[in-house]
Image (cartoon, rainbow, N blue to C red; front, side):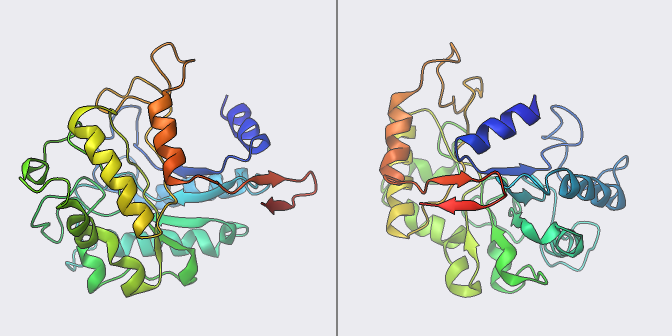
Length: 272
């Protein structure tokens, strides 16, 4: 099934990022670190080695997200058992050092509350530690910071109830991760965002698209295609066939003329 999806995506010019989402089906809310008792870091590295080899000749698999929403991690505290910035560097450099490993971009999400996020960060959105301790990869331009960012339907953060909402949001997004390109020279790409396109969530989504456009950061991964994500819905309606036109229009507003990618039989990649 995965092979068919991957190959069909390539035929349509769709790029793929793979992530370590959870160690078992449905345990993502328990897997706050990049390892657990049954999956030590050495085993995690072996898993990445397998993916490097498996997708070496699949040109539309372009990136590895090292860990989905590592909410139990810390950043630059000196504790190697929890410091995500050091672990991301170790894992990322390991991937880049393997045969064919340097074809992949390395996506690194933020923490949840380390350093302390004074106005509440979503899981994967806290990059405050980058100010003083950026992730260090052997090939700097392979690093992409990847926040996960959501609106009121996912969690009612206090700033969604501020009298200045949504005008207050750009400063918050800037504080959480918007500073990254300016301070580090690396890009950030939103790894997850989405929501129900109605009510306050619609207000948030429209404001977020405006922020991404104004800051020239329109490359994103939208959550999600499937309709059964309870707090966000998907790009498909519940019959799994009908597109959610309002969301598609929102994405077209964000990227009116997306890059067209084609893959040749000889391995060439053409961008238009």
